[in-house]
Amino acid sequence: MEESLYNLAFERSVLSSIIFDPAQFDEFDAVLNPNDFYLGAHQEIFTSMQSLAHRDLPIDEEFIKKELMGRQKFDERALVEILTANPISNTTAYVQEIKDKAIKRHLITLTTEIKRVTLSEDLNGADVVDLVEKKLYEITQSSQSLDFKDAPTIADATLDYIEEMKARGDSVLVGVDTGYAELNRMTTGFGKGDLVIVAARPAMGKTSFALNMIQNLLEKGKGVAFFSLEMPAEQLMLRLLSVQTSIQLQRLRVGDMTPQEYKSLNDAVDKMRHSKLYVDDHGSINIHQLRSKLRKLKSRHPEIELAVIDYLQIMNGTGGKDRHLEVSEISRGLKMLARELEMPIVALSQLNRGLESRSDKRPMLSDIRESGSIEQDADIILFVYRNDVYLYKEEKEREKDAIANGKEFVSKYVEKEEEEAEIIIGKQRNGPTGHIKLVFQKKFTRFVDKPTFGAAQIVYENIDMSSANMNIDVGNVSMPII
Image (cartoon, rainbow, N blue to C red):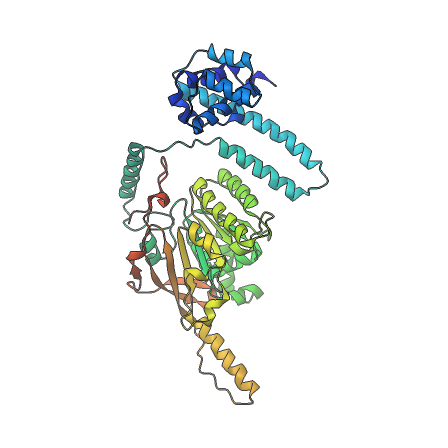
């Protein structure tokens, strides 16, 4: 292998520094692993050092030799070369060099693996891509430092964040604009790294609610990625155009428009052509594929501020038989991806049918399908609720019963063009829970703010301020301030 892919002198110096000053080992162990060393003997020596450290034994020449001989891996020449190498003071630069060269070697090994699995008859193309993505992700993960952030670093980063918010001059909005004044006030917007779950029963309008948020961001020139697992991109565009033009969706679908409306439509289409919307409407995708696609898209279009998945429960698993474990992998993967890309990810979710047997059908956390992992990983959980949906269903049931019994039926249900809707904040890791009143315009499948404010009912006692879950990232801090 080319010498540019390894440096034995550096490896010897690092190992020599550990023997010279064993107190440094924990620092090295947090960054390096045995496979980062090129020479097999060096890998074995570092493995022996790990074993000794974990058993609280001295990391010196005699104990290393004893450990290696016990595993029949002792290479006297290699150990002598390490003992005679000069210890180093600037260990960080040497360690980084070893890590960089290790990554290059791992990538070369991966290219060989790609060729092997590609020629395998046991795997189809999708399986090969998934395997490669997984291996590449493992390589990139192993290259990241696991060091702690110390108090001065965190404090300075937090102060920088506060000063940035002060300079912005907006006392309400901190994260991504939701498009709704009262929701912004209660959440301060969706923060970088947030996993937001929007859950509802069918026909409540969770997709419409998400599209309304998207429309708001697009109008402000922001970028949005949308993964539509059950609806073609063209249908999504129809909904967005209906919201933008206020032309009834059903009329828009059949082209039933006045000349003025048609002009309005053309203007809206031209506006959408220049928007920063990216839709993936392949109906089959797993967390590895989604991770790969969103990473690539974000790297090419850093202006993307929000990703939406419609919806979580129909995402594919990665081969497991237990659906609960698959959903756990998906929700955890989405949370980690949101943190990695420093942007909120909104995942739509279905609710269990059981809530419809209750007298009060407003959703709660336990109503989310496979709710355990989703509830744990989410930073914010929003429920979309429209009571008129149930009133209409109940009226239809009464009509059906009357017809079945040969009775005359007079409907008392009044069809409304605008219905009251609630957005229920069931969980917010760094803020209050509560209820927000909106208006749902049925013809345009559009949620809008109520004309007056003050409808929010805030519950402050449910705030989880666990420091392990605060969204603070040094260098690009995103911490909602309550």
